Image (cartoon, rainbow, N blue to C red; front, side, top):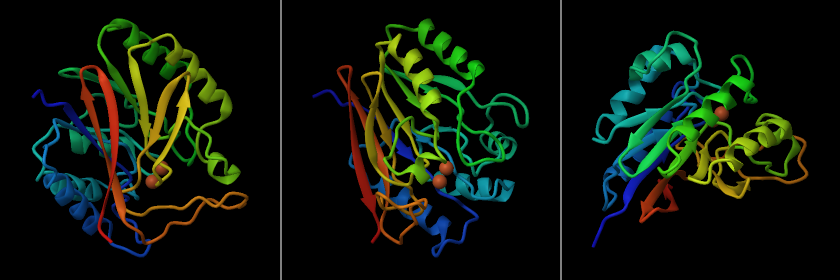
Length: 254
Ligand SMILES: [Fe+2]
Ligand SMILES: [Fe+2]
């Protein structure tokens, strides 16, 4: 029987944070859970907030923990990251604080990484440069199934305070106009919300990964950003089989 292509998504490690638990220990547990999967990943996307403090030492700690996994790593920045040290640690193209946008051909799947951060603020944005780049990248390979990864997931949570630190409706709509032109884009995956969530944009699934470090629980009607809780961490196993994508949400720890 043919085996699907397996892309694991790990998100929001926040190494350097002290929010009631050790982020490196959490990452270690997540890595152990991925290493124990019956089907090893073919590639791993790291969907931002790898470090909480943007410090080179934090990225080194992340790299050290992930070294146990043999699959190639595809990182992208979150609002807590600093592009320079992140790019340095993972050998990404470009210089210093330049945007981190790239594509990677992963056998049957093309991964597109789109930088959504605005340095100095928690909310994200897509400017014309970002969307023009994405549109051209997708137009260059219309026959290859593609997955778009970005830190801020283009969805509305239904909690105004949470949506206030994500993407504006105008930016989500502008991204949706690009997505609508490219039927080979199978799904958009993100992190940032620390909670497993699904939505849709231009008819494509939008999937937010849980955090490896700390989960959040939605409280509708709350004026505050949902607080983190000491629950289990999680990650996602995306599988592509005969051109169809399915995403399995996994939890680890107690
Ligand atoms: Fe985060
Ligand atoms: Fe974030």
